[in-house]
Length: 120
Image (cartoon, rainbow, N blue to C red; front, top):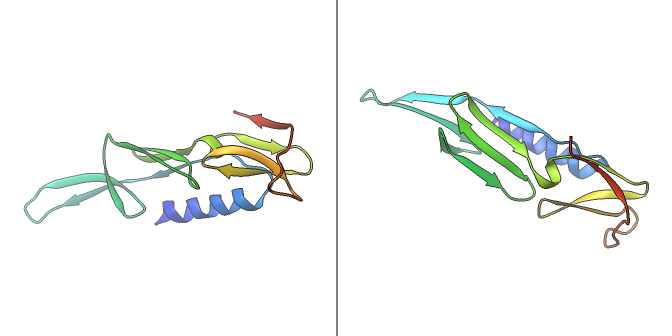
């Protein structure tokens, strides 16, 4: 649940601010023992059990690569969510299927000509 809330907050921030910053989130390994003594270890994402050693990619609007390891779940942004985005004056960043597109603040259907994308 903590991961889900963090993602929602980050997505809201990225939608309503002109600057977008990359991010990663983490979650613990869950350990459960069945009534027969079988130990099950996995990561959990949005209610799904993810096997240790597995990875997956989330499409827009989340745009995240996730991996479940012995240390826990780690998800980091890619594409739209992977870099520091600083649009030129009068423009905003738009998430177009995880690709960054810069549009005019006054007309979202008009593309901006130049922007600064910092992949640090």
